[in-house]
Length: 289
Length: 135
Image 1 (cartoon, one colour):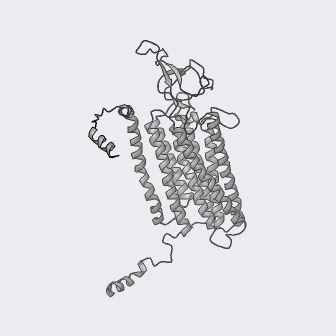
Image 2 (cartoon, chains in turn blue, brown):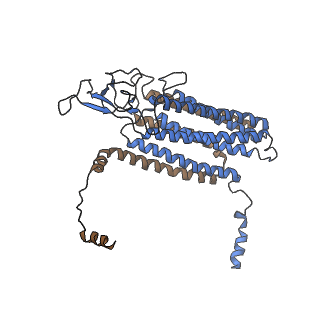
Image 3 (cartoon, helix red, strand yellow):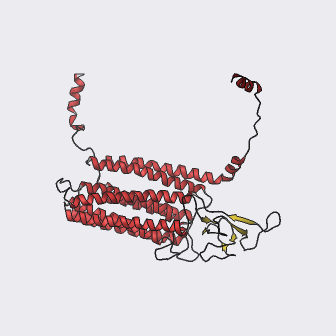
């Protein structure tokens, strides 16, 4: 027994003796990393659920048709607004980097200046998301349980259009996404005459013209969209709140005394970049693909 | 931090420029592939998706390694964060494969769900009688 103890003390220098940080990082920053790891798994779970349901569905709304509105009554500008949103978030990520760098220099005014810009960016993003949601809910009538965006699966003609200058008799391309609006005062599926690729009317087995119902798009789209972008938006909102708290603390000189290079700013910086990182993947699955 | 203030400032400007350029390229590529820029020109959906995923992963790398300073952390910390995240690769493959299979068997599943099973009910007269008399 005594031998083992003696043997241990010889190699003591090679072992971790405590009192030092094994990863050369403070406890707070390390735990922020592990919180973000767990949060990444939460987001990954949601996004994988989205992907699985989308893969399992024969049709899916085409994003550049769904997200084509722009403030000021502008329509048919695919992906423009969401690109602006992405740039707002990227810009706020950059101003956050600058705030952290000024913190390392112990430059109080620099930290506050760049953090204020970051807060403005975060708020601008939240405002943009509010506008996007409003447009989808009020204008296009997408909800958690309703998705009027349908992808046409075969050649056919609507008897009534969707209000976007589509008239009776228009032919629709399979795979493309169309918005089905009110029909005879009711929200519902529209009947259409099935035609072949040349536009000739097709008869059913009974010899009568074949009329089919164009169904609404998969319901899961609305639920997934509002839940995932909402969860991300909630992260942005809590990020903005914590940014404001830390910015006020920095401005009142709370972190000057600590002499740790404004570590609180670094921690909220990690969180803020993570929010931007998640948006990279939300942008990928909802808008780009 | 291992590098000077001026140098890290320069790196930040460089990284944000690359991120912006990739984002613009992604959007233009998405619009080009779907025929918005050149009339009647389309790119195969699988190639589009692959290109978008690769570009997004490059963006993710830049955000985590440069903005979040992962590049300058200890290798042990990097491993504890990135190795568990790597497990997600299999989760994505497995679930997407399952989703695709679900789509392929949709008709079969629908038929199976609407099947009615005829069950032969054997009346247990004696049992019922016993219970009722007990009460």
